[in-house]
Image 1 (cartoon, rainbow, N blue to C red):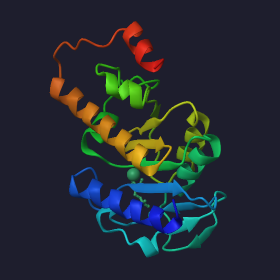
Image 2: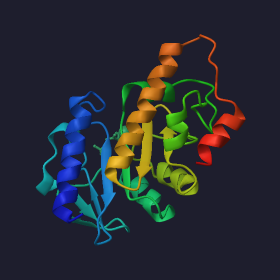
Image 3: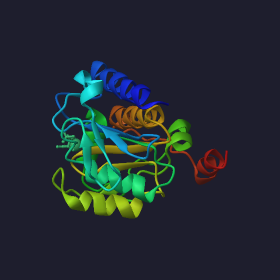
Image 4: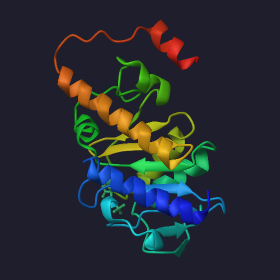
Length: 208
Ligand SMILES: O=C(O)[C@@H](O)C(=O)COP(=O)(O)O
Ligand SMILES: [Zn+2]
């Protein structure tokens, strides 16, 4: 994919998230690894529904701002994921409604906050660890994600929202949506008794 195609893909997916209510206001940020080894990221304060392909931020993996508008305040945690996960080619962070609601609950299993009850989330994402609460932009988000990177495809920032990696921005976006729909199902099911997938059913999905 050329840099221009990557820019257009980011604009298109940002607009799609926004149009369907997965992103609101200026919350959330996206990034992807360009073929030249640099990162393309959404500018800080930008609305995902109104990104401008020519004003997207270009930064090095070391964090030097090369061109475009000032990068997201979360660029450090995006960089931490690329640096520590060779399969990570794109990152999506949203404040999507149900995952953010989930991130505010007490007593989450911090190793995996989404106990599997449908197959697709296991097949596409797997376990989702919880990163403790730090204020947005805090360097500790990058430190914690550095340690978890490479072992997981998605993370839930406590009292904040999801962070999802992918081999492409499209894959990261699709997986974010799958997680958001799973969180929505959790709230829909509420206190009803759920038949969770058994360990062997989960293992079968993981070994495909
Ligand atoms: O929650 C926050 O403030 C950030 O994590 C965020 O979602 C938007 O920050 P920018 O990417 O700097 O606009
Ligand atoms: Zn955020």
